Image (cartoon, rainbow, N blue to C red):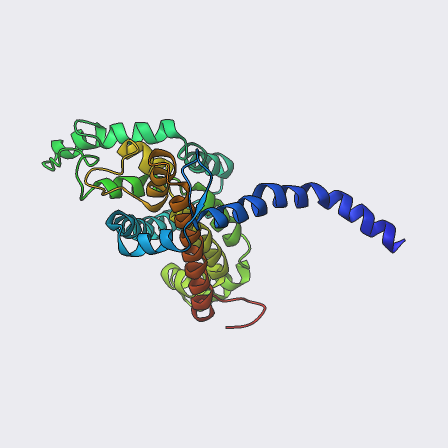
Amino acid sequence: MTTRRQGAAWVFLSPWVLGAVVLTLLPMLISLYLSFTDYDLFDAPNWVGIRNYAQMFTEDPRFWRSVGNTALYVVIAVPLQLAAALVVALALNSVKRGKGFYRSAFYAPSLLGASMSIALVWRAMFNDGGTVDSVLSSVGLDLGGWVNQPGWALLTVALLTVWQFGAPMVIFLAGLQQIPRELYEAAAVDGASRWRQLLSITLPMLSPVLFFNLVLQTIQAFQVFTPAFAISGGKGGPADSTLVYTLYLYDRAFTASHMGYASAMAWVLLVAIGLVTALLFRSSRSWVFYADKGA
């Protein structure tokens, strides 16, 4: 009976196992091999050892520019996006009527924002003479368009990500609804203000959800591509100010046809994301509260 159940389990698992091996594991192994080769998509790969990695770290200033831009983007976009999601979730949690409508309305940008069409609209809004530039000019802030300014272009990309706060907002809202109401009732009896309840009850009880959203959004932020590609026209301009890591990886792979170098960049990104995620898990010991384990 046990053997029959195990056989049935493998039958149900086989599509996932087959997909994981063919679509994930095998391409990763091929990419790892190509990262040690000089490969241009047309000729056979030529083994070069660690030359791609050495060139990346010692001879390529645009690689380090892309690393810096990506790190700055993550530092700007992730906190702002989580803050916007948390504020809206707190507001929706107190709404009595129409919660489903408001939830859908705020979630919609998450479905639309990743598309190329919305990114192009975003670029037009922040371009010289666009809607945002015209509004700011009317109040005396004539910046000449954010997209064309090296100091503002990356912020434009980050704001498009912040606008897509719907997914973390829904997760925050689900977490808020799991906090026992008795805690707020007891705090109210003791005379705690709403601000004190937020700091002493809501945020500690919500910290596992906040940590989950932080890890998820950080990993996604490191892989930002579509907004930077659309807003910069695929070049990472102006003056490489929007040259994020994945955009430069795409440039090396499909514009310069340096597939081996791009594969090496992909593996460096994978290791970097793994290290950052490990650091986040390490830091969670000091600020994430699990009710079933105590403080």
